[in-house]
Each structure stands twice: as structure tokens, then as C-alpha cells.
Length: 348
Ligand code: MG
Picture (cartoon, rainbow, N blue to C red):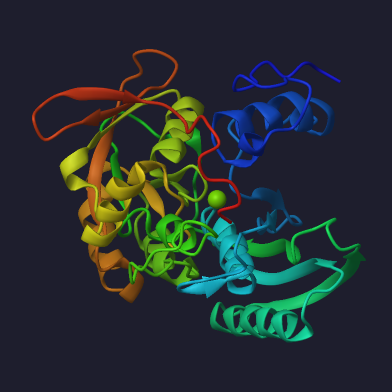
């Protein structure tokens, strides 16, 4: 086994909670353990779903897998069942794919209340129906009390990539606009507000939602669409930094332009969190060539989930290895990096 270089100050030979936060340590774990041994030729520039050619007629399939360990399993605006569906179909949507089918593997802790399980499965079924997809295969395992925390779900999603989709890091060039489809940080705050020992009332709901319909019009109608990714774990800043690194471009975003609700802003001030690093489960980042940005915005805003869509920045020529810059309202510029730390374990 290869050595894992970064340890966040802890034991470099053990897995830390921070290896699961979607930030810097997660990337290192993926690169130095999983891609090292399982990745074949895939080394960098990974998309949210693998895109596979399916036969000679040019059709492409998208395949993705995800595990859900959110704590608590029910939170304002959703639960682990609906989240599992949304998280999976959104990784398909990010490569321009309509979801075709899901699988679901359940790891259950001995002693879990049957009614709790039924509620989660019902919620999953409703979310799948709303996303226009079925759960077509599944698996169940039960482990002893204490060997899991109530219930974990692993999903795989299969999708059909729209013929018009031409999304890659290679197409991202200076002058492209960076769009987000709505407010940042809602999911992270909603889950944290129900954490044991932290419970507080905010009225903030998770944004957990399926995004294919929201982005379908842009994929079909805006050929200048270059790239998409949903800013889940690690939040907007981590995701944009990944895009900057993989496309070898700089990205500059305007702090003023980034939509954050007053409630999320207030909760972040209270908890010492940065909304740019909080998870979202119903938002997409789009990189669109300058000429297509206005049309993309118009199409997004027509959909209920895209009413607050906005341009937050642009792509610039690379000044290093792919930097992310935040321009503050007072005219300062800060360099942002991926999330590094273990502040928000088990957020999805
Ligand atoms: Mg994703």
C-alpha cells in the first residue's frame, strides 16, 4: 500500500473522519489508495459519473455509485432515503445524463426500528418516482448493534447521456462564465441543526432535490455549456477548486454574487462556518461559454429549482496549478483551497 502523505496532524496510517469530508484528504485518499490500485488509466479529471460508450450508434451511458451515512438520518427537508436518490441522480445529471435505473444496498444495524426503516424506504420510493427513475436491484446486510449507526445506504445510478452533452474539463477556457443554480449551504446547515448537542431552530430546510430536469434544457439548448458539477461535500469552494485544478484554469468568483440566504449566513456566523464550504444537495455549478451564459440563466430560472440561478464568476488563464480566487466586496482577493479539516463529518 502506498503512503498517504497528508494526515491532518494525526496518524497517517489510519483513516480519519476528515478522509470523508469531501475535501483535500478525501482527494488524497482517492488518488493514493483507490486510483492507485483500482483506477487503471484513470488518474485525473474524473467526472461525477463514468461515461461509457454503448454500442456503435454513439449512445453513451453514465454510471455512478455513492454511499450515504448522513447523521441524523432524518433532517429538515429530507432523510437518508431521499438524499440517496438525489445524490445519485444528480451525479448523473452532472454529466448530462437522464437517470435510467438505480440500485440500493442497505447496511442495517441490529435493533433499528422497523418503522424507521419503512419510513426511509418509502421516502426513497417517492424520491425515485419524482425523479423518474426506479430502484431495480438491491441488497440487504445486517450487522451487530454498534457495528453501524442505524442505517447506511449505497446506491448505483445508471443513466443515458443526452446526445447534445459535450462536457469536459478540456473545454473550459478563459472567459467562460461560472453559474450556480441557487443558494449555497442550505443542506449543511439543515443537517447540522439536528445534530446531537448542537440542535438549534433555524427553519432552514435541506435543498435536497433531483436536478436533471433543471439542467436538461441547458444541456439540450446551450452548446456553450462546457462543464457541470454539483457542489456537495466540501461545498462550492472545494468543488470550484477541483474544477480549476482539473481544467488547469484559474477561477475568479465574486463574494457579493454568491447567493446565501440570511438564515444560512446567520447560522454560519453562529457556528463559525463558511457557507462556501457547506454541502449542497440540490444545486449545480455550470461553466458556460460567454455567448451562452444569458440563455443558460434564462432556461435555469424558468424551473422552480433554478429561480435564484446567477453568474458568480469567470474562468481565467492559469497562474499556477489552477487557482480559485474570491474577490471580496471591498476589492480584496483571497485564494481559496479545498476543505481541509474534519469540521463536518457525515453530512451526506
Ligand atoms: Mg457530484
